[in-house]
Structure formats: structure tokens, C-alpha cells
Length: 473
Image (cartoon, rainbow, N blue to C red; front, side, top):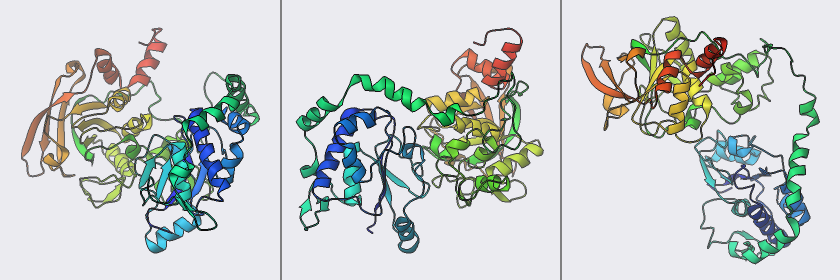
């Protein structure tokens, strides 16, 4: 098995698999490869999960579904799979090569997200490709080649085959689509996909209040779903819980993919009776805040600049000096009555708009996030969770502050003074008594956002308005 071996080749995502032309092109490439006797390399885990359930109908009508299945690209379902980290285990041969020879595999997917660890926790590099190119890389078996000029594969009689020989032309695609695509397929296909007997057979409560099950490992009442949440604004001295650099995405913050069997979330689930061999994926556990909080910031790319050598998802508790998971440190700081904050670099919260990235910060007890800049949607999500986003002064980065766990961060963000884009005084007080003072800017865009922050978040604001007979704005 070569280095840069393709461990996963997945036609996935609701984005480009909903385009019939791209799927037909993939089918035509598979047909040509099949006729030449080509197969996907044995270590490649292949799959296809179209965004549209009508895909099966037009691919079958075109006679291309069988060709795709012959190369391993059978339809495994409709919806989020590899693109959201639901890729399952790697093939045994890839796992063995990683453990014994240090092979660094890659993933090829026709999705729209490729952050490190997103597709699979063991895969650092993932490359985005069209559906037909995904099939081509499954045939090649590795990404360490110029796919336009190097041979893609070899026929059983030893003849090299190039990508150009397999790539379908526009006229071929047009001809296949003309006989296969029918507009009347789409409505009944979606109706059939939604008519799930298993889903319809679920026992659903009909009570006015949801009957929370204390034994459930999937749905737990989260602390932020409450009317009595307190505002996180005010004048206070906070401890830095986490300091990170630039380009920390919501995929770095919010856990995704399979629940790792050795992690804190796995231990929590196993202690409550879950099968260690079937812990499911974090996306299925999003209704359980206690499982999710144990996976925050555990992406292998995350480094806590307070102590860069400690494991991802950890911090150093002050004053004990103990290294512990973020959620455990947050619990201790909360018990000690000590506020915490997160400090970050540029473009904090970029990537997909995972609401759990902001929910997680709220569960860690953060009263503010100080960053060089914020991604637009994540900034809004922080506000809605009652967390104040603060922009550091232009030119200031987290590394410039050289923060230590013993530092105290004094923030004056009283609710009565908070207005859109107002100045917020900040003082970093060192353990030796010296101060570093600067003025941050409240990344608050409207008066309503200031009102949301004063209320402790959008959920308590809406609940209070509803109980008072008002219409939430």
C-alpha cells in the first residue's frame, strides 16, 4: 500500500450529488472502467449517498447503477454520511498500514467540507472532488500522482489506462440523461424516502411538556434550555480556559465523526450501559449535551497555547497546575465561582455553521470570547447563547498577550453600558502584579443583540417573552 493511499472514496453530500449530470458522469466513468476490467483498489472504502432519492431512479434507468455498484459505489442511503464524518471504520488493511508502517492515508469525497479530522478522526488530509473524479481516485488507490497525466490503473492484461480514456464527454452525458432523467421522478422519490415505517412507528409523547428520560444517552435536557439563565455580562475577573490561534473552525470546536472508544465521551456512554463497539457518531449524540461537552476542542489540530504540549481538548487548571479535560476544568472553575473566557486568533468559528460550537462554549461557562476576528455566523451563535464576542485591537494576536493560566483577565462589560460596537476595557493582570491594558470592541451589531446578551441568551429571552404574553422579536 502506497503512502497517500486513498482510504475513503465517497460520493457524498447534498451539494453536488443532487446534480444529475455529475452522478451520470460518475456512472459513465464507472461503466468504461468496468468494461476494461478495472476495480477500485482493495484498501479503498467506497460508498455513495446521494442528496436526492431520485438518483436511484435515473441511474437505474440509464443502466449506470449496476456499473457504479460493480466498483463499490452502491447507494448506502440518502443524507449525511462521509461529509459529516459518518464514514465508519477504515478497512483493516489501511489501519494495519497506519500502525505498522506509518502510512498517511487520505480521503477523496464529493462533499464540501475537508477540515482535518472531519471526514474521519484518523484522516488528516481530505480532498474535495467531483463524483466522477472520486470514482477515478478509487481506481488509482492513491493521491500521490498527477491524475491528468500519470496512468490511473492497469487492465488485467497489463495495459495502462489514463483518466482521459475513461472521462465521459459532454455528448455522452447528454445522451444518457435524455433517456434517464424524468421530472416526475422527484416528488414520489422524496415521498417514498420519507415514508419510513421505522420512523412512523416511533413512540412519540403527546404531553404538553416533554417527558425527559434521565436514563437516555441520546436526549438530555440541556442547562441552556431554561428561563432562569443569568446574564453573562458584567464586570468580572476571568481565568483563561483556552487560548488558540488563527483559523479555528467550528469543526475544531464541535465534535464530529465517530465517538472514539478511548475518549471521555466514550467512557461517559459506556458507564451508562452503551456498547463499546457501537457508540455511534457525535452527530447522533447532539441531543445529549453531556456527551457533546466531553468532545469539545478534541480535534487533533487544536493546540491550547496556554500549554501547547498538552492533549487537544485539555487545559491547565490554576492554581493546582493539574492538566485536565476542558469540561472537567470548567466544572471546577464553576464550583470555585471563577468565570472563564476563551481567547482566539483571526477568523474564529469559520467553516460550517455548527450551533454546537457556541453551545459548547456556553456549557464550559465562558462569559466572553476574545478574538482577533470572528466568522459571521459563529459570532451570531455566540450572542444567541449569551456569550459576549469581543474583538481584540487591530494588530493584536493571542500570542502577543503571552497568556499564562495564572493571569487574570478583567473585563468591564456591564449590561447597562453595552451598545453595538462599543469599547470594552480589558486588563490582563499578571501573577507578578503587572498589568497589560487594552480596549476591545464588542462584536455586537444591533440593539436586539445587546438585549439578548442582557437576557442570558435567546432561549431565556423568548421564554420570558412568551410567559409575559409578548411576541418574541
